[in-house]
Structures are given as structure tokens and as C-alpha cells.
Amino acid sequence: MIALGIFAKPPSPGSVKTRLIPDIGASKAAGVYRYCLEYTLEVARQSGLDYRLYISEISDDALLQDEEYALQRGNDLGARMFNAMKGLLVTGTDGAIIIGSDCLDITAGHLHQAAQALADHELVLLPTLDGGYALIGCTRINPELFRNVRWSTDQVLKQTVANARDLDYRVRLLDPVRDIDTLQDLEKYPELLALIASS
Image (cartoon, rainbow, N blue to C red; front, side, top):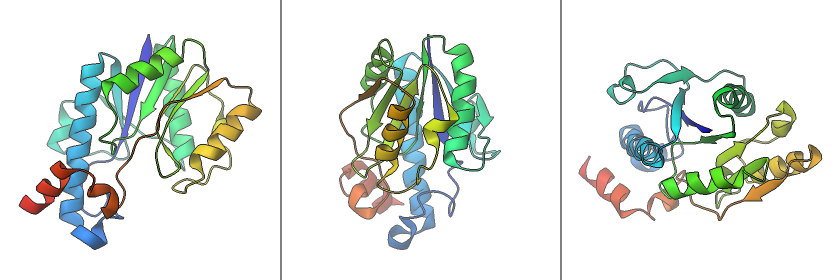
């Protein structure tokens, strides 16, 4: 069994997609994030994997009310992913996967591909075009995997893979996808342009 975790924030104006705010404003940026989160939850349902939402803070947002969720724990993204992965691996006897919630290129097929890769690899990553990754899966977890990773830079994937090699992980990289951080990213998705035009 593979367990799936989704990392998310409540879709509140001013706290999500902050790099988009100077271009489209806080309210529209939050609308983009909400759309992406709804999409991600639907992909998780389509995959058939048991999933849990890990949110950054308690929220009464209606979108989150029907979801089983836990709070992210840790001082930085690496610590939060380590703690979540450790919990997921208790139920994910064949491995665990964590995805973010701002990638419209990710599909249920990617989740199945990652799950299959964990049959003969200890770590699988779905790279993003900006040097990060949209998915991480593993069969064992070590806090050193996230040591000295410069989060939110174009070095995230490279540094994570280097750490994995040092820990003797067998690593599988899937084909890269695009996540959504900037106006240039947004312009690749007509549905998002239509969303912000109508809001």
C-alpha cells in the first residue's frame, strides 16, 4: 500500500501565491491557489490512493471541511516533509508520496508512476522546470535527505538528489512538469487566465 500526503495552505488572500500578488492582486492569487488545490484533491481521488491533507494552519475554509487533515509540523519545509513522511510510512507499507498543491500538470498517472517506481527505488522525484520538485516519494526516510537544501531556489532538486546519493538511496526521476509561481507560469494555462479575468 502506498500512502499519499498533500501539502497545502488555506486559500486565504495574502498568504498564498504571494509571487503573483504584485501582478494580479491578493484576491485573484488566492483564487488561482484555490483552483489548483481543488484540482489536486480531484487528482488524489482519481488515483485511488489513500490520502491525507497536511495543512499549514487550522482553517474553517469550506474547501477543507470535508477532508481529513493534519497540521504540518516543523520549522522549515524539510522538517515538515520529514515529519509527514514519517507518519505516512506507518500506513504506507510499500512507501509514501507527498505532493504540493500548485501543479496543474500533475495527474493520477504521475502518482501511479511514482508508486510503481517505489517497487525498486527508495526515492522518486517529479522535477519541476524551475529546479524544484512537485512530488517526492520514498520507502524509507532520513532527516539528512533534506539537510542544507535551499528551499524556494533552483537548487532544491539538485541538492535533494545529492543528499539522496550520500544516503545510498536508489533514485528515480520522472519527466519534469511545470508548477505555478509566476505570471509567466500562469500564462501557460488558459483556464487560469479565464479565472482571473472573471474574478
